[in-house]
Length: 100
Image (cartoon, rainbow, N blue to C red; front, side, top):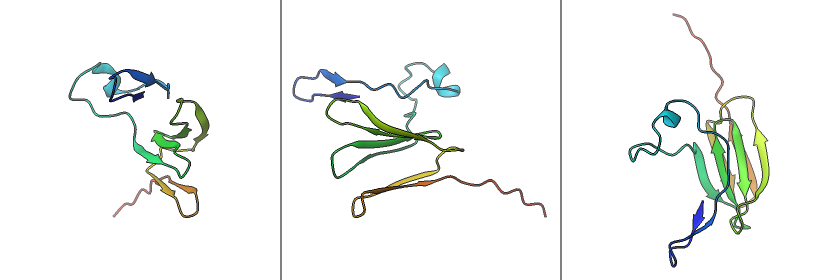
C-alpha cells in the first residue's frame, strides 16, 4: 500500500495473495504483525522488493504494479538486495533431521 502523508489518502494497493493461518483468523486486530516476511527493500530504480512465504515480488513504487514475481520451492528465510550488483539473493533453509 502507498499513501500520501500530505493528503492522508491512499495512492495504490497491491494484492499479494490471501493471508493464511492464524493471522487471517485474527481479522484487523491491532496486535497482529505484518504478513510480509522479508523486506521491504528498495532497488536503485526505486522498485519495492518484498518476500511473502515462498514468493518474492518486485513492485513499481509509483503505481503498485507487480513487475515480476518468483516462487521458491520452500519458504524464503532470507532475501537480500545488493545495490552494487543490482542483484537479489534468496535463501531457503534446508531442514536437516539430526538424531543423537
